[in-house]
Image (cartoon, rainbow, N blue to C red; front, side):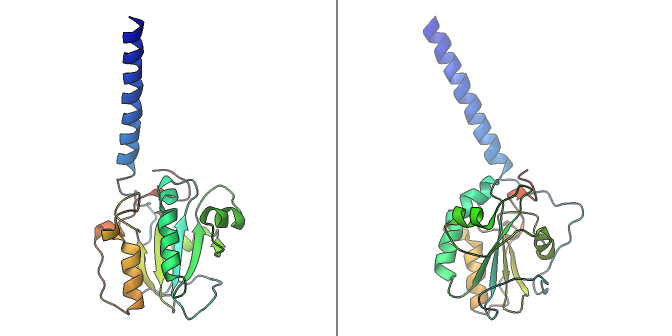
Length: 197
């Protein structure tokens, strides 16, 4: 009898854990709700933000990151691969979006990179970003080229839908007719500034 109770109890715990995992996965597969006061920013618009970058003649890759967002955490290695491939051709900046306080060193340690780190929420508003992780790619004149997702899935492992790399390649090739679908442009992930869904 004790053995049966233990087995039933373990099966129940397993079922609950599986249900929570499935629910969490399902929640993060839904688009992030658009804030009521959201102002869209169209490609080609000049983004007026003050950035200290190494080379003002290079395009700028803004990585919007929330240290408490599971999607942002899953995306760190993907961002590191993109940085390794394109750091000689782009300026990279991490924009931290969190209601908690972090230091530049905290963020640089998470990425193991010495990149500029900004904490200004006005940058997200200027770029039309309302969730993390998101990419904003600006040309050398600070015109918006791409604002959207890294990938179609939260684990950022689907190389066929690596929208961030496609956008970078398009910008570097001066492709002004690159078109992305809804999976690239609809925000998924954690709402700003808190890690909520």
